[in-house]
Image 1 (cartoon, rainbow, N blue to C red):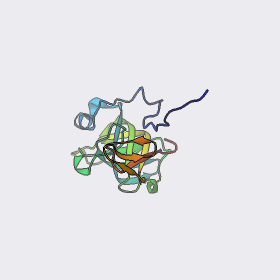
Image 2 (cartoon, helix red, strand yellow):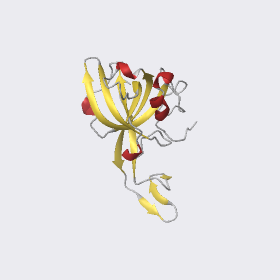
Image 3 (cartoon, rainbow, N blue to C red):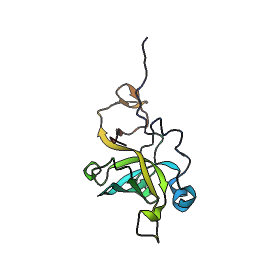
Image 4 (cartoon, rainbow, N blue to C red):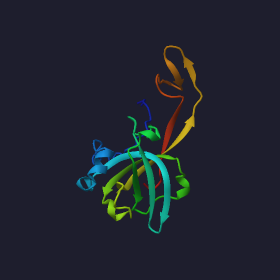
Amino acid sequence: VTATGCNTYRVIPPELQPVVNKNLSYDDAKTQSTRHLGQVVVWGGEVLKTTREPHKTRIEVLQLPLNDDLVPAGEKVESSGRFLAIDTLGKLIDPAVLPVGTRITVIGQIRDPSAAQSDTANPTPVIDIRDMTVWDKQMRSTSFYPHYGPYYGYYYYGARPFSFWEGARVPGS
């Protein structure tokens, strides 16, 4: 028996697939955070600051739109604001792993924002990290075929840019 196919990286691990609410947008959760407490969401963006505390890590993220592959592919001007992603399980994250500007996709459970921040006049959505992907931008050599677009290895990607993102799941998440 021979198996063929693509080895596709899945941002949402199988055990979280049934509980993730892909329809809950960042904007909806930001405006009605108490209504959505406890829901599990997929958000992404660019790291603004990572702080290690005694039993957790706080990641301040500039929210960016996710593409169909759940990669934060938007520009900073497309952001709807910030969110905090907190490692409440105590398994993650050395701030050196997440320098400023790193793009991440976080699967997290929405929590009460007042418990995690001092600026209650302008609350930021807060999620407890359940899984996280760190995206590494890498260049690949390409050939360009007229009428078809660039060729990356074995597949054609007609409208895909010359650089794209490869992800790595954070150990322990």
